[in-house]
Image (cartoon, rainbow, N blue to C red; front, top):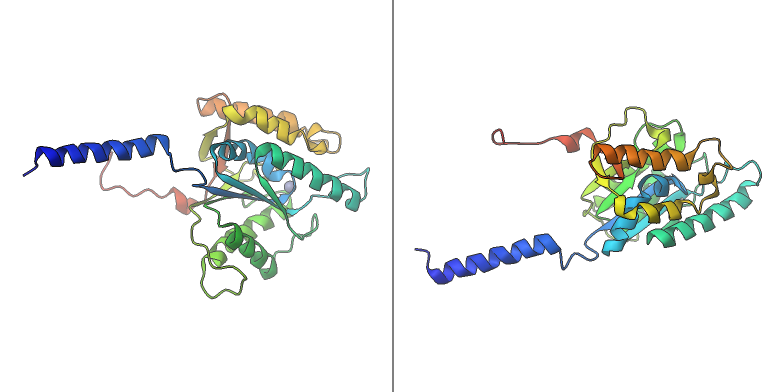
Amino acid sequence: MITFRFFLKLLISSAFVFFLLQYEPLAAQDRTILAIGAHAGDMEITTGALLAKHSAKGDRVVILHLTPGERGNPAMTPEQYATQKRSEAEEAAIILGAEPIFGPYADGEIPDTEEARRYVNDVIRRIQPTHIITHWKNSIHKDHSITHRIVTDAVLLASLEGVESDYSRHRGVRGIYFAENWEDMQDYQPYIFVDITDSFDVWKEAISRYEFISGDISAFPYYDYYTSLARVRGALARSTYAITFAIDEFGKRITWQHLP
Ligand SMILES: [Zn+2]
């Protein structure tokens, strides 16, 4: 028999759970987002607005750049441009509220090897991300598609016991999301749309730190493309600005007991 006192308790506890779900008072640092790009700039231009949104909520945001992307500037040596790209990445990270990590590889030469998987595995074990963002599997730039393979394999490696590493295993990755990048569009299907209207201006400020965004180095109109894309995706997401992610096919599986 349900007594009044029990019913009151139930009501209070339900209200408390509802309060937790609504306001997430203990949610600071609930998420650690690790974005892994082939070149400095890749993750900021594609997903920087989401990273800024989460860092503003109190989540930890880390960006791993496997290479500086130092070979794209005809006016500089790769060494000079690497120095510039690193400082641009550091300035962008400050604006986004992110921590940058610079990997040990060279532009155009990310090795599709076990060693590279072990390097990213170590970063994942050290950072302990709840969410990982990286490149889609197909790209016109081989560094991007190799990064995809390295990262997806490294997530598995990082979850295993007995793998030689200075860090203990990490099984807390809740999801891997693939960012929308103009170079990675073959078979890319936007699956998740995220409203980034509130962080749009911060994101534009952050990506403007990169010289290549302005179009002086590459002929590709990065700034116009990504700001326009955010509006196009926003229209589809019924917001002003949005970005999208693809996920792997397995993640799209839905199990029902009956029709909703
Ligand atoms: Zn790139």
